[in-house]
Length: 635
Image 1 (cartoon, rainbow, N blue to C red):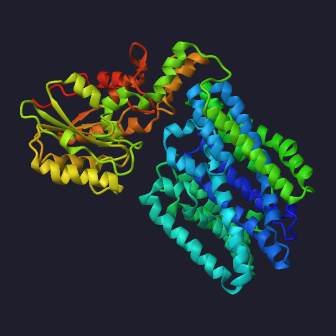
Image 2 (image 1 turned 30 degrees about the vertical axis):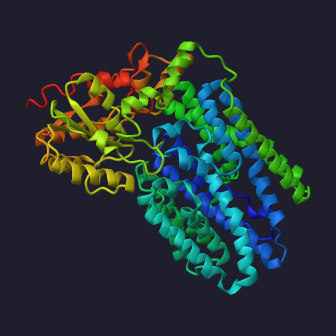
């Protein structure tokens, strides 16, 4: 997504195969986001872009420093002319289009993301608010700007560091940068397991990817005399970039070690593919052209996908995928001659201070427009009261009913809770000598059963220990909040309590089956009856929004059945088959929510069964809980 050195005013040699490498990077991003390939494959493209960016920008800075002509004002002028006009136009277009597609409460959230994107802090915003790997992220039109924010934050500090080292520690410049980039890589390795969102979104764990390209620019690779080994390096680089596209998925640990192959592959292709068969392939004209429009394609493709899903439904068939890819390509192709090049030519002779002042003003205007949107309660499109009432269930977590249903804040630790919030043991783990005592243990997919179970079985005393994102699997890594809860319940409470039954539920994933069986057997030593509750139905968006938009845009019946994601179904089947063999009680919410694959949309009085991609409303929980425990304790 970087400017070619040949176009930058820096007198350095332009390697034309880099445009082909850009194309190689943008393809998995677009295909992964549109659903043609696994989402995880798209991660590879971002890594490759980071390497290219670090290489090209550092080449420009280094060449200017060597000539004694480096200027911070000139550097940031070039940066703005490259990224600013297209970004501003896309954000503005998204804000306008959203007026006719999104619901009023969604517009307010979009306004916040527009402010973050315009100020290049969207990676921080999404780190605090959005799980990139989860279904709700698929409806955020500016989510993809996180990577652009990472780049710009890198270039706020890196030129000053490079300038200072070049002036006062030139002898140790490369060694210092190697140490910094290695530290970032090590942080990424540990963070990918320990702090997934921090590692994915934020600069400290991404800097090594940009730094790999920067180091290649500062310490150019020696030429390889042997044609055989040059070809081998080219093909190895290509394999390292392409292979992860095929095997990475949204459940892969990333970036961490999984980011190393595409980063190394990009370095090999930049350094040694020129003059090889792979280099010739990367200079193929259609690939070069795709590389030239790759920045526009990156900016346009995700809003196109989000708005298309909003109108046609979250399930994308082959025709839908072709349509969004074609629309994205068309917009990117138009952006280059109509936005990118005119802005660059028109402003290139303006003094750097005026360009930067004008650019800052334009960014602040867009940020102001986004901020204004956060204060409005209406859009350009009128919706019926029935549609708005249905869509409004997407804000269910903000209601008093949600807090009572989930027992949020004391028996359910939510992501929205303040740091340090702990389970209220006195209230949530209190035994009742007059009623059977049943403990509900698990994550938010256990907590969403709570209100329904208490309504269906008032003669039971339900204890509850639940926390968002905390599947209580023994031996699995957990953050401190989850680890503390697991320690409290499994190690201290269960061995000393006299329970009549234990219900364990969670957002189970493929690969959890053995851990679930081990947990049930271990916990069964302290409870006469153990029940595992399977996964809920999951969809490619928030259920209220899917149903409301189906009414607005004339969606056919059965929209939820088509939007259902396949993984919970396969997990449900695997768990049922395994637990039948072990004799452990198993209940399947999926069989109630989506009997025979036909998903129930509402519970009663038009109330949707679920309020987001998977979690049950109280009305939905009552439907699922009715009869769930019948003939269980008696066995």
